[in-house]
Every structure is written in structure tokens, then in C-alpha cells.
Image 1 (cartoon, rainbow over the protein chains, first blue to last red):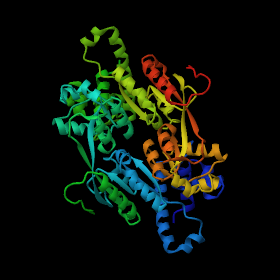
Image 2: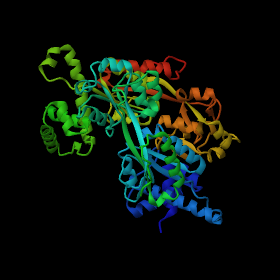
Image 3: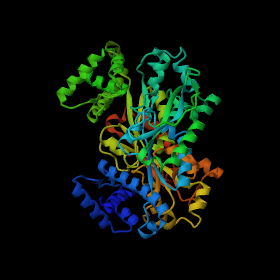
Amino acid sequence: MLDYPALRAVAAVAHTGSFEKAAKMLNVTPSAISQRIKNLEDRLGVVLVERATPCVATEKGEWLCRHIEHVAMLEGELFKNLPALAEAGSAAPQVTLHIATNADSLGTWFMQAISTYARNSGHLLNAAVDDQDHTAEWLRRGRVLAAVTSLEKPVQGCRRTPLGALRYRATASPEFVTRHFAHGVTARTIAAAPALTFNQKDRLQSQWIRQELGEDVAFPTHWLPSTQSFVDASLAGMGWGLNPELLVKDHLKAGRLVEILPARPLDVPLYWQVSRLAADQLSSLSQAVIETARQQLVQPVQTAKSER
Amino acid sequence: MLDYPALRAVAAVAHTGSFEKAAKMLNVTPSAISQRIKNLEDRLGVVLVERATPCVATEKGEWLCRHIEHVAMLEGELFKNLPALAEAGSAAPQVTLHIATNADSLGTWFMQAISTYARNSGHLLNAAVDDQDHTAEWLRRGRVLAAVTSLEKPVQGCRRTPLGALRYRATASPEFVTRHFAHGVTARTIAAAPALTFNQKDRLQSQWIRQELGEDVAFPTHWLPSTQSFVDASLAGMGWGLNPELLVKDHLKAGRLVEILPARPLDVPLYWQVSRLAADQLSSLSQAVIETARQQLVQPVQTAKSER
């Protein structure tokens, strides 16, 4: 049997960032917290918590945190059927669900889905943000229980549901277009006009160039790892870049932004993948996500269906 | 003498994400790029580029990228005085300035400063985002040349200028306040109301609790690593959290958000720290940053002055 008081101590320190606050949270002394973690670390021969300000879980420590949260979720289900159990023991720690999403989904449609779910379920959410091509990796490693991903293929042990596509528009300020694309969008002008790139994982600008020009072109770029800053930088004439249509619709209508090639969007299909182990407990989250996506994302003409 | 063609190849691969695009950018064959990097790696006995899709620089490779960018900036200065030199050799690669900022500055006042600078200088910017207590670390490690930081003490080898304070308001939706703080904001109600936390490095909510309640209180929290999503989650009634006043002013005025304790802001003083090695070349960036900050941040009553 795992040493659950020790696991809970690790999770509480990772969550609060200090031994003192973890102690307060679990109603024990800080030295009890320290002792439990130390014993577990000695037994496993690995460091679970990095003693710093704030304290953070190591990679191994994070695995334990995920496990204890998953167990807490299962306990929550059990207590619904056996309420006497909850009253007998100490209060179950509040459940935190770990999910991953791409930044542009979080910045557009995803918040509506998760805020509804959080209010109704009373669960806490921890949203990890990564590129849509990489959130599946978080799922594969067991660091999250569900993810918005561009990966069509089901991750092993997961259920996958198509969500529709997030539509991007290649936009810039009108003044930027006059300055850099007066002679059209060609390999030559693209190679000279500063673009915007989210981070090293962001290939959207390259994909759009390939889609429109039929070849790869190296281009100069600013780097701005924030969905909203991308829009702000576009408005300020700093560069051109692929912005989610949901965020720039009004700017396009008002003429503050223009498409550098009119009506040439890039669609990125997204999928909701949920660990099978948690799929039943997460069914109301999945429902909220899928419903919101159906309203906000671009849907294919045929009816999308849930698949395993 | 360093092997500059090899260094440039590493930087080009890190920048474009592939050997093919780097080759196109430098007008050589992909195998030349591959050969140069391989030779340098063999000589140094370390991997500089992780061969993946996309290719990314390793930590050691990043050091070389920073160096070559710094050299390119110095070359740019030299070419201004000796234009014949630029024409004789191949074109100098475009300069990318690496700077670090906290997410909330990027999401509020910082874009105005850097977009003006980028347009006027023609330089590219790479903005790294980290917590305001941690951007100084990026500077210390030489990964950026300048940073917005909460660190008052000058980083070794850097010049520091106070920028004023970013003011935060502890906000939530009116409905959330009714639900969770009908009996006031006390240790007991804070311990039960879901908060919002940016990431493990974000201590703003804890700081505000200590400032207002005079003690540390562990509290349940959602985790959302995005400035704009923090505001969206507050509006959606998901939790309470510290939002930059610049982003929630209009929501507060319209009553869509309220302060959970009226007129109890938290001010986070920010500083601009610039590597001395680059301070002269970055003087126009520093000027743009300082001017924008003086307009947008909360200024102390006495005149702030630049210090060394």
C-alpha cells in the first residue's frame, strides 16, 4: 500500500509552495510534513520536492501529485455512494483536474467550457498550456487527464472526439501591408517582412506560407509567446501573423487589421482526448467542451461523430 | 577565433526549425549546414541542436545563439561607420534582441514600448515571458540582454531603472462575491473560495491575503497560465484573483467585476534592467520602455531616477 499521508504532504507542498502552508492545509505541524516527505524520498531514493521559494515538485514528485489527485477524484465518486465514509474520515482534499490546451483555444473558446464546468462541479482546474501539436504528449505522459490537441490519432488509452477547426487569418495592420506587401505576397516580400511567431513550436506561419505560396520560405520574425500580444502586435504594425478569427473578427470588420491575402484562412482541426480511466468522471466536462466547440469552431459539412 | 559560419548555422537552424530552411536562409546546401554543426559539436563534445520536428537549440546551443546575435548587433553598429564593409562581405543577419518580461506587463503596457522600438529600429524582438520575480534570472544567465523585473537590486553587470508599479485589483464577478464572500473576506471565507493562480511562481494572491488579513491562509485555486484568461475566468465567475488594473478598469466601471475588498490594491514595483555590454546599443529601447512605463504604471510621489 502506498504511504498516502506522505503523498498528500507532497501534493500539499507542491500546491501551496511551502511546508508551513501545507501543514496548515492538512492540520498537522510543519515538521510532520517535512518528516513524511523526507521518509518517502529516502525510501524511493529520489527527490520529490525542490526546497526553494516557492517549493516545487520535481518531475517524479509531479507524478505522485497526479496520482493523488486521480485517487481523490475516485474517492469523491465513492463518497457520493457512501456518504458515511466521508464523515468518518478526515475531509477529502478538493479535486484538481489537470487538463492541457493550446494557448489559442484558452484565449478564445475554451474558457467558456471550463468555467461552466468548474462552477457546476465544484472541481478545481489546472490548465497546462502548450502548442496544439504537443498537448497530446502531456496526455501520453500522464501529466493531464484530458487535452485539446491537433492530434487526430487517439493517444493510447484515450478516447478522442473531433471538435471542429480553429480558423486563423493571416493579418497585419493596413499600414504594415502598404509598407511590406505593396507588391503582393510573394516569396520575396515574405522573406523581408517581419512576421510574428508564438514560440519555437509554432509552425502556423510556415504552414500558411506553404499553403499559399507552394514552397517553404525562411522569414524574419519577432517572438511573442502570448495569444493576446499577437493581436496587439499586429494592431501596432509590428509584424504579420496568423491570428484566431475569433479574436480579430471585429478588428477586421473595423479595418484596424486586414488579411494580407484576402479570404485565405488556415484551419487547424482540434480534438478532445480524454484518458479512458477518467472518461466517466469527466463526462460532464467533455460535454461542456464539445458543446462549446460545436458553437465556436468551424465545423465540417458532414456531422462529426465521437470515436474511440 | 570562433568558427562563425558554424555558429551562424546553429542560429539559423534554431531560428527556422529545420536544416533545409536554414540552408535556404544562408544560401548554402543543407549538407553544408549539417557538416558545420556536426564539426562544431564534435569539437565541443556537446550536442548543440536537438534533431527533431522542429529542430531546437539545446541549452548550450542557445548560448551560442545569444552570442551570435549580440555580435550581429555590434556588427550593425560597425557597418553604420564603415558601410563599405557591409557591401564587401555577405549581408549581416538581421538582429534579434532577446528580452524578458512578466506576462502581465506584456499583456498591458509593454507592447506599446516594444512595437514602437521594433518599427523604428528594424530589429526583431524575442520576448521571453516569466514571472516578474524570475526574469532577472534570465538576465543573470545571459539568455536575454534586458528584462522587466521586480528585482530592485541590480543584477551583476546590469543597469537598473525604476519603472513604477503595476497595480493589481483583487477582483471577482458580483455573483461570485455574493456566493463566497457574503460574510466578508476573512481567513475562513478565503480558505473556501476558489482563487485563480497563474502558475507555481505566482504568489500575488498569497501576498494580497497577507497584506489584507495579516496572516498566511491556504486557499483552493484554479491554475490558468494566461493574463487574458485570468480576466475571462474572473468574468465567468470561476474564481477571484489579482488582475492588472489596466486590464479590468472598464469591467470594474461597468460592474461586470468588483473588488472583493474595495480599494485594496496590490502594487508590484517593476524595474528595467539592461546588460551594460548592450546598454548603449539598447538606449532607444530603454527610452521607449521607460517613457511608456511612466505613462502607464503607478509612479511614486518623488521623482524616480535612473541608477547604476
